[in-house]
Amino acid sequence: MPRPIAVLILTVALLAGAAFPAVAGGPNNVVVANATSERPTVIRSSLDASQTGGDEVTSANIARAESKDCTGCRAVAVALQAVLMTGNPSTVTPTNAAVALNTNCTRCATFAFAYQYVVSTGGPAHLSPDGYRAIAQLRREAADLARSDLPFPELNARLEEVGARLKATVDEEIVRTGGWSRGGDVRERSDMTPDGRE
Image 1: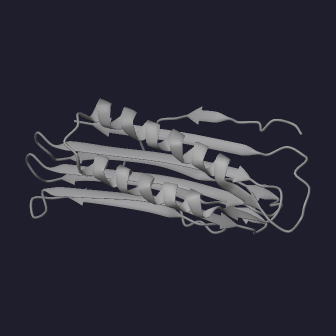
Image 2: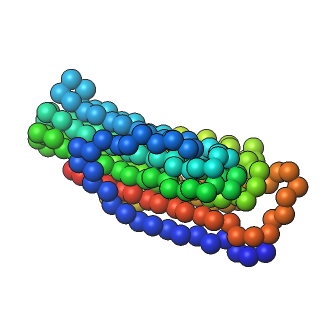
């Protein structure tokens, strides 16, 4: 059986002020953290693992953090997503982006991190119970890291590790169903978009 082909793309996206387009076709994971003088500390995180069998996969994984019109605010947004494509989609255009903005802000700390892993299983599949338990643990770990006071470079490195373990868990715990052949290529796409600002 051919070995899986993996593609790792590292991009940095600064989409200042841009609205995210509405997308359809697969699960979306959008995390927004907006800190203001009324709410000086806002921490949000989400780790989602879903499957889709549709003809179009345009899943969006977005982390957006903004500190606005305040002094000493802290905004942290963390989004991690795994998408299992169980069908044979004709369109595969997932989106992964992290945006961190300081707007009219003094001594604010703003951080956003996004990791997305999309894999084609080639047929009906789901994660094993052990896989779901491991993902629940990774979800808790990502939330704890987001709430930590780690310096942003260290936080970014630790979240990259969580993303790598999410990918490994999905790869190891996919359960193929329906009696279809395991032959053929497994298409994978993995995107990591860290963006932090202090």
